[in-house]
Image (cartoon, rainbow, N blue to C red; front, side):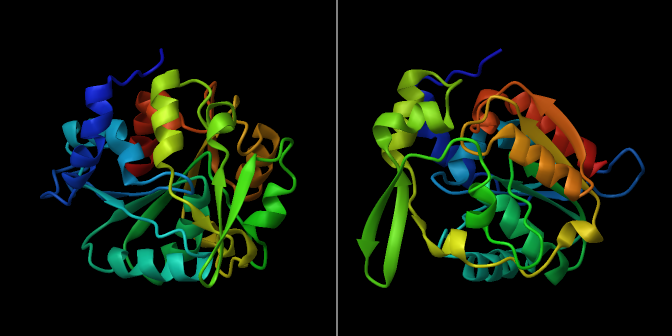
Length: 257
């Protein structure tokens, strides 16, 4: 079943995301505290894209944080996210969507308490590998627009082709809103090499999106298998956290348990 937003709901997404701060941990089924779920978005999105998942996780008693990924480059983004992770006490589950998967892969071992990694249609690079190299193996190149900016260049998805490339199973009006508000990514996000492989020592889960045109299912399957992740597949676009939030939430909670 598709998740559809009204215009009013779209306007309230950011407010909901701001409420997703850490709450007192609730006892888990094993008697210990529930881990804090840390959500890291990818390129051409922001923390509000997690709103339906945040709502469900909080309803189930999980403390949640949605960290804003600066999208300035893998090295600096990893340092930024690591700084925020260091302020969160207790066990943590890191969840990365798309490019956010590369960020959590590199940040996971820099802090204590990370008990599992969850990749939502996510990139999982190995040491020395770039997102650009992985993306080159995707079946359909993204329709990107490059804009020179001070200090470098940024890329966005062509708004006219955003829904087809990123959010094919969303309501057209919502997809148009997402295209309009997409956050540009610095080109260093795809050219800087990964340096850490968090999945080597931390259990990982992955949600593979079979209707994805941003990261092809075959590429996702290759990365998920290489990382030894426990894989769940779903018929959804790259914007799965909005179109299938129940599936995303279920996988995250599996990893949390």
